Image 1 (cartoon, rainbow, N blue to C red):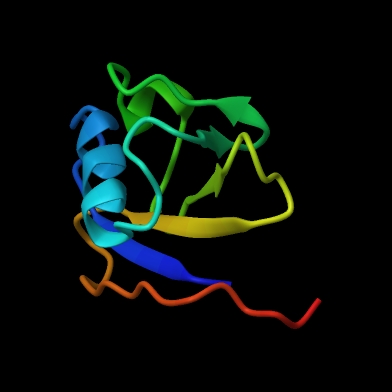
Image 2 (cartoon, helix red, strand yellow):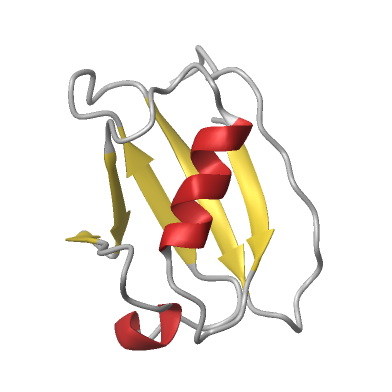
Length: 93
């Protein structure tokens, strides 16, 4: 399952994460899909702090048109490691 590791401040709008994801995974059209944290759809105008996210929090991304094809975006606070990975979806269950 492809993943991207993003470091951001707890007070930074989540739209920055969403923009980063779309730029990193160009096969996903901008604006398609849903970003979720613990099952709740994220609003890009809100911050990780608004959702109670802590270092290592996991944000999931689901394509609305193809729910079986999804990728994961991992968010870490500014005390976590800074690294980025994106790749093809795994075919293993």
